[in-house]
Amino acid sequence: MRPSGRAPDELRSISLEVCVNKYAEGSCLAKFGDTHVLCTASIGETVPGWLRNSGKGWITAEYGMLPRSTDSRTDREAARGRQSGRTQEIQRLIGRSLRAVADLTGFGERQIRLDCDVLQADGGTRTAAITGSYVALYQAFAHMRKLGAISSIPLREEVAAVSCGLYRGEPLLDLDYAEDSNAEADANFVLTAGGGLVEIQATGETAPFQRDQFDYLLGLAESGARELVAHQRAALGLA
Image (tube, rainbow, N blue to C red; front, side):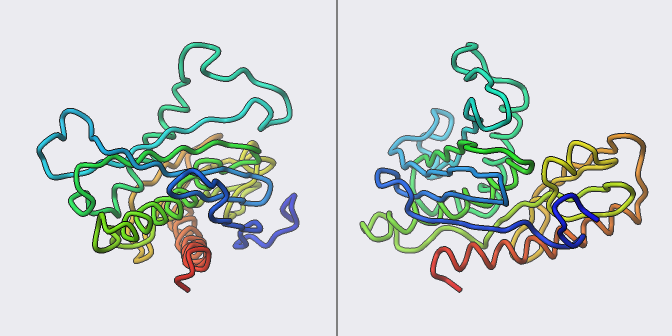
């Protein structure tokens, strides 16, 4: 029995609430159970110097955990004067995941910044951030299309992310903190709507795990990603 009582292949309660910030060109409050991440998309009219005159745009991300997103207060990274390695790794992952499904030539030399702020953490913050960021990014592109800046949405397909792992020897989908912190193996999968793999992060926490176990986890992730894509489409009114 999972601590949450869920079935092994059951996602947490998923909510993708759109238009939660009146200033951002796109916004989504992504809730994976008790993990809540606010994702906003902001459009800038310039690109990094190395992309100037290339005809390409850029998508990047910033990620952070608020001081009371966990059971004890942590200092803001700005107050410490530097980002942790974990923060840098996650925000780069978010950026790579969204760029993987975007046509960077389809929105001119503009930069879209995705800000992912963890309001409450109960495991899987990076997967919630990626899934919610896609929704925010789509809205930003829809805003540009409405203004006539672009003629179509420059996204090839949806992208979503979900965690899986081995907990007490059993493969499970969408780990919460109670499972993730005690898992024998932990993996994060970023997948497209068509089943393409964007990135896999997998670690044997207590001992190596076997290929057949990994294949089972991948199957769980594929099923979970399909459900998440359905939630994305519903949130955007595309279902």
